[in-house]
Image (cartoon, rainbow, N blue to C red):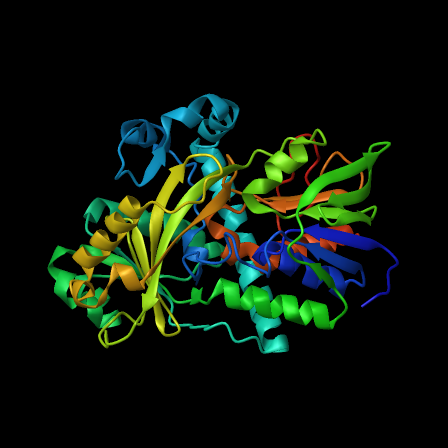
Length: 427
């Protein structure tokens, strides 16, 4: 680790921001992390699906999706719901989104996401081995189930196209799915089959991020919790300070890693970061007496939910809603996710009690391409690490490593997407 005089202020103490801080420390930077919450990982990093998965790297901007979204407008049970009121404010983002649904762009973006996801998984494993953080890690793989044979065939073709690039998977028939996860035996007659991804892992993102923040602090990083960023002070087109509600912090380098809130902050200094918040909902409850609950994470393609065992808890996640920056969870959408899960796992009805569960919502920061923005902005000294969409937990460590490498003048080794108007770094 080389010693550097530069001070970097990281804005945001979610999984991406804290991972960035860790790798900046590795390069010898002095680091300060600012977050408005009283601890790390209390917003979108708190209740995500819990899976670190290279199996879900396909962007939401994919062929055929614009037509589906139009058909879902106004339907409360839609898997991806766009509120009418937000349409006038997202037209530019939406046009970029549609352009990225072309087959060639979808293929390029998917492959780039896979490379970053695999890089991130390796980085996460290295950090975990080095620090010993307990985050309820499980390495049983992930099973994705299908009821439509055509959907299963299409998914198998997509996975097969990524196999030469490092994606490991196994195609299973209905009996094979139930053998892999016995809790699926009740729903086996409805299944066409599934895909099993052995490399995918599970872990509590909140626990990991808080543990990593403690490890960063032990190495000298300063964490300013309960502190709201009010302004990025720019003088002569260069970062000069970060003004907060608790005073200013002088610095000539800053990293914006505020998830969905990155875009409005950067807009104040003339930088357009095409990131929109997309609300996701999860339900977390104690496994309790459900002794036959799934041990392998299951993602249901037709019912559009994921059920993931995390330590002694069960987490059900799903739903996507484009509705600005409101992270209030919708009880109706939560109930719909629970009902879908109960269809696949009938025993759930006997053990799930809504009044004892934690209904949560977070804002996924989604770009039109489905790829995160990692690198320089047009403002000298201002960097970005945001826009990870549904892959924030999956890509956090690799993204933090890649950005820190760039800031230290090293090649990141993976393809990255930067903000508009900034030349992308070499892979």
